[in-house]
Image 1: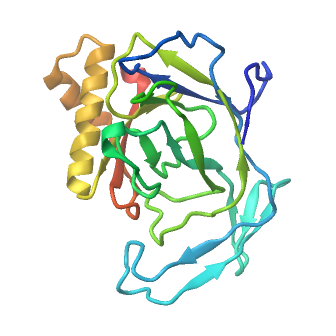
Image 2: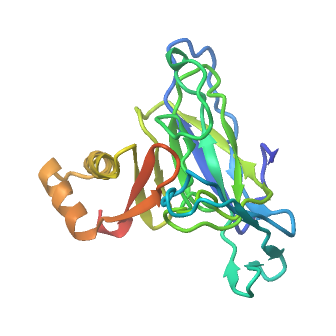
Length: 254
């Protein structure tokens, strides 16, 4: 991972992660150029594994197995051992600020309010992610490099490989945020995380209704009905302790 304060102005693929909110003892204004991201696969192989007792079907797939798909960076595909070629869509599975100090030390597998191991394939180049800040300095970090992943990540891994990115961070003191939220050029994206997939879906809907109301003159009832007609819920991942659901709503409808 590399960082740059002044990215190339004509970069074709970049991602702006915007960190919002400020902790009680924030001592300085971070009005520096924000954090841009250009995501690229940097090696010619990756791996996919089945791990016993993990994944969506832990009782049915009980033997270890790992494959090593080849990566053709020139053609932007990975080649499975049986010959199928899958287009690459690289992203960082883990994107986070540091958790609340009261939570103590948090492991990396479970995503929570600070972001973390969300494994959301929509958080790729060209997307803006908003994260709450719970500590002075935010303590942003990213990792868990993925070459490509399905919605669901059902067997426990994506195409695990090496990815480089250039980030731009900006503090938005004009926003109040307690939960991750994202948007692309075309869609708003709300994020739900919970051990229960139904509760994750409820959270994704609730967050989208809140953000639609904040950006428009719609009532809460009207925003809820809009989500029912045009907000598409997707299963982000089923394997990270807190399961993920995200909703995509076209910005053209706002």
